[in-house]
Length: 284
Image 1 (cartoon, rainbow, N blue to C red):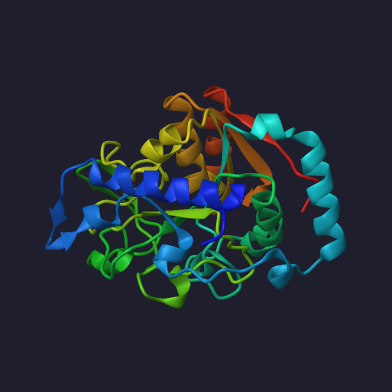
Image 2 (cartoon, one colour):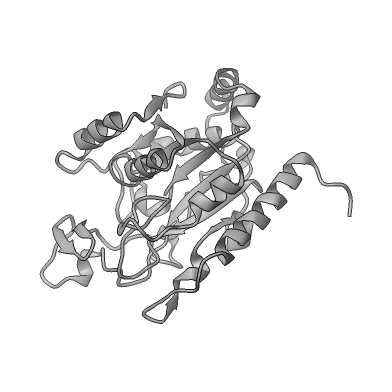
């Protein structure tokens, strides 16, 4: 085997560390499902995610090149050494026009998120990964409708249309999203009894996904957050990142929100109160 390039060496190192994080916690089974086997941060290729180069998905080369240049000048290579990009839930079921839980305008950010990936050495995609019949689905509750709110063991829970069910097209990442060998994936929402908005913790606020261990193993001190949806999964990921001590920056024009009554305004207020920073690329 020839000598590894610096990028290949980084990816191999990250993969080893990610797998180590998984083994450090006890095995946990829920309803016969080995949820601990899913816990952790893994190379996208190990999870069967198809690799897609930027040239394969670029639908606006001129704008993409301008974004990359402006982002590259805005962030020095030194500042990126301890940074990671978290791309939240850019999956088919969250994208118009056909997604089961389509976020308005969600398809507008896919290309911009791909541009962001090129600016970071450490990139983690979160993937909503629900089993069929998940407790957060309205269809799992008699007489309930999507977007109703119910009370569960860990507090209030919004009930959603069935979405991002394991093994379905809707669960897959958008075909317009670049996936290179440096992309890692953390899955969430696979516990049938607990929803998971944040890429760090399930909604019970105690069951970790393994993301924190991965970032700490890579000596990350700053995270940039982009994706879907701003008022739910992006918000809770950013709040957890800040609470865990990371400098946290939301790339605002690479996010879109569900926009239920009051949720966007609440997200703005909570994120500002937490001291989370905001940044734009160059306009989507």
